[in-house]
Length: 427
Image (cartoon, rainbow, N blue to C red):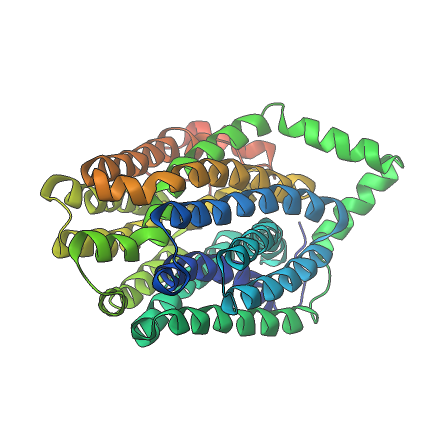
């Protein structure tokens, strides 16, 4: 496949900002809603519902946005979604009652959900041949920066109460607006354009093409890829959502730590996460991908297992936070995104990833409703749940997904069968 001649790093940065905004909205909501609680009278139940609605709206957005991106192009979708995100985060920054919070959360979740699969597909389609994994993995570093930026802001403004939450949402509004303006300079994906043109020449009935492409996802080999990546991401994102949306809540309620102090503790994550993300970028397109995956999987299980075994204290929650940051770089979101580009052809890529994101986030949304109450009443059960989730995701990745063939080449399937336990098709 011929790759475009223009600068792929520009695409990686601007399209990858979807991952930054995904993380920033998720983490900011978890922190800002805690800051809003006294002023707006938010109960534990409402906090759980708001977090659940954010995740549920994200899922619906990913499902629809991915399909629309494959049908009508990457550029149209990511432009509309950013407009929606700018409006939604502005509402959240100005919220004076629960109704505004619920409205802002729903629109923000839908917007970032619709943006993510389309933007990731664009990164893979613009990356140099043989380095697609590296460029897609770069989006995971932006995802980490979104987390760290939000937690860093919480350290700076956490002592301001509701005003601190407004500042955090307002910053996201400004960043989204800047990204929107810069994305307007990006052209449509040449790979998507070529694939769509070829499909139209083969069959002028566009709707029939679209229905047939959806049917292909329900047949081998793609149905196996959809099932595997959906299962991996679903169980992993339950754990990830818990630490992303509720870590501040856990520190405050279970370890009696202030929001501001929690933000300061989390600043240690910045060098850990960026270093591990950089190592993953170097390894993802080589035979070192899966040894690093095993390392990350073990670290994640130990991280969540520490408060399970020793109870929720400041030091165990810090081990959980730092360990997850390290392990997730090699055995979490980044690798899921890479797999989601490798396993599907161009006109199914965003649809397939949008579908698996939707499945994962809907289930995570349901679970999120109960996380605050479960953490308060039975923290042992909560940590048993998240530890089991990262263990299950590791098993799915190692025993199933790594053996699936890539979509681009029939020869890849045969190469998987010849792989030793510590090699990958990229080697």
